[in-house]
Amino acid sequence: MAIADASHFDRLVDFLKQKRENVTFHDIIALAEVSAQSLQSFFQAMDAKVYGELREIAGYIETMRHEIGALQVNDLKNSRIPAAGEELGAIVQATEAATHTIMECAEAVMGADASDPVAYKALVDEKMMVIFEACSFQDITGQRIAKVVETLQHIEERVSRFADVMQAKDIDGFLTRSERERAERKEKFLLHGPQLAGGGVDQAKVDEMFP
Amino acid sequence: MAVDMSMPVLVVDDYNTMIRIIRNLLKQLGFEDIDDASDGSAALSKLREKKYGLVISDWNMEPMTGYELLKEVRADPGLNKTPFIMVTAESKTENVIAAKKAGVNNYIVKPFNAQTLKTKIEAVFAE
Image (cartoon, rainbow over all chains, first blue to last red; front, side):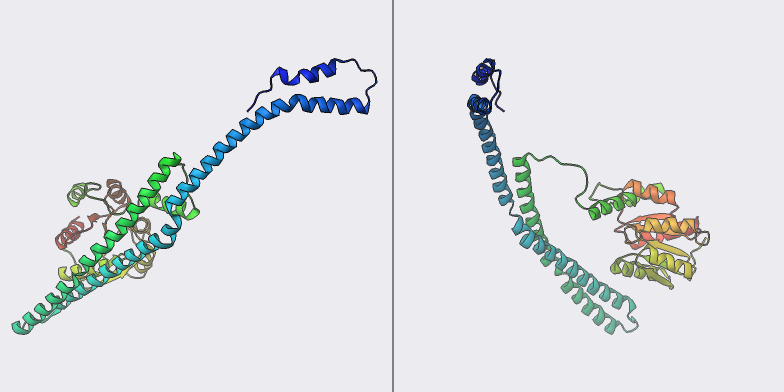
């Protein structure tokens, strides 16, 4: 912000130093004119400073707009994230269907009458073929997972770049009430979910805790 | 103490596949009277309707978790002696300690095999 210096007010000071006994409306107008003229250079200096700061802010907003655009949020929201969700849904369905088929075969074999070895072998052979076929889900599931991973990498790259450019700092708290409630529930009931290798205790360690 | 194969067993899990796996394993072990429930509150209702000799429960379920179910069972004078085995993917030490403190009889980490289930059931009834 511009700082007023004494020279801005010299004319005003001179005007006020003049002795005046009967102040008229003309004197007041004259005072206003002198005031305006005296402060003109001050306001000009201030204008230049404010203009510079506003230009800086405008530049920052322009950069931010560009970076937000680079995030491609509409593409993420309308296309990539829903597509990834559909892929995950398809994975769940495929694994469920395959598990169902495999278990059905196992149950059929376990429940079969083994008194006729020929018929029993034919049944086992037939069910084993069905199990082989059902296991083909893994190939397609692998390809679907690769697509979801690609989407996650796409999001990660853009969000990381945005955070770096904006020098973003994390703030505490939750975005929504349901987000907070989910987090509180997880904490209260110790819901950590499956751990990666080395992240939790194995059965042998658990057994030591139940001697 | 020998395991009574005729006693009713309640399997609690929100995944049908898991219920089916445990059911089949229990059948292979010789159990015949097996019921199931999809969460803690459904299990609690069944436990109050019928006397079960063993509860095998998952931890992470909605709306009532297996951990809450365990605490409810232990707090109920009519149910607090029911043997309770937790079968779960929750494998953090704090989970095992919390379950033990709440009165679980044994703890199985998923994925598990038939032998582990058999050993744990035998251990519970040998207590």
